[in-house]
Image (cartoon, rainbow, N blue to C red; front, side, top):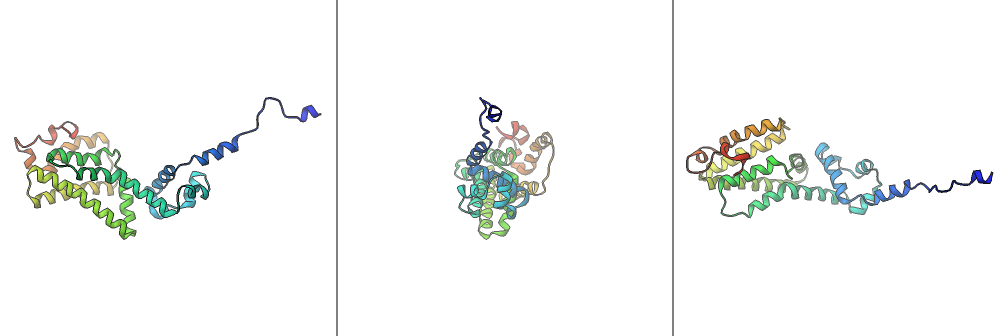
Length: 224
């Protein structure tokens, strides 16, 4: 009887609980921000809540407070994510000098088109969030102004006068933002096939004049 009741030799106690504890301990701040970003992009900032994220990640609220001081701290992390991937490329272009107009325009557009790392969904989510925050609304406006200013620089470098450069820059930018806002989708191959024509329409006659710069349709993949 004693032999039957004794645990079999060679068997070890289950370690399911320790593994679970380890998994919780290794949940990083970045993991919380990534989960919050998905909620932000799909449902908006009002749905980014500690309890919801804790349940989704299968951890306790205590795990959240191990990485964040408050919900506002997490929101700050989301904003920094937007700044890092959707703003930093344009900040870098602001520091460029002696630009070639057509190449500069191409580089700006490719930030949006390549989406590496630029995220249209995150940009729209932040824009929607800014409607509830005056401070964030100003930051979004400043970024819009910078993107348009960079486009204006590209058109001015191509030889267009100030007023026409402004209008062409706005048309280009509003077209891009409108495409995101409408959640317009099409086959990537079809989109790429239209890019040269879009370039010719947006860039206009100065770029198409012989001896000024190659036509967009003559540029391989939109780049020199």
